[in-house]
Image 1: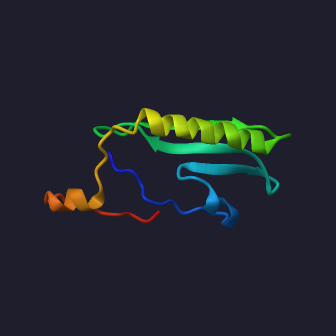
Image 2 (image 1 turned 135 degrees about the vertical axis):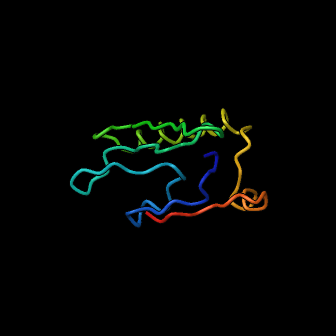
Length: 100
């Protein structure tokens, strides 16, 4: 809890340029919108934000809305002091990274 991910593996090669926590929604291999997935907002319990932005006719507009919202989240939660893996291990806590 309270650990922001440094990176996120993306399923599609073209999604690797998307910002962290943002992924494309596809239907028949065509982008129809974007999701903000598991954006952490708490350091003491598992609280995350998930939000979907869809526009089948204009996915660029959905991308703009999603990135604007992601910027707002970054600004709103920038003062939370998230811990890194190294900080936790330095405190003597056992940390395990699990590949899914």
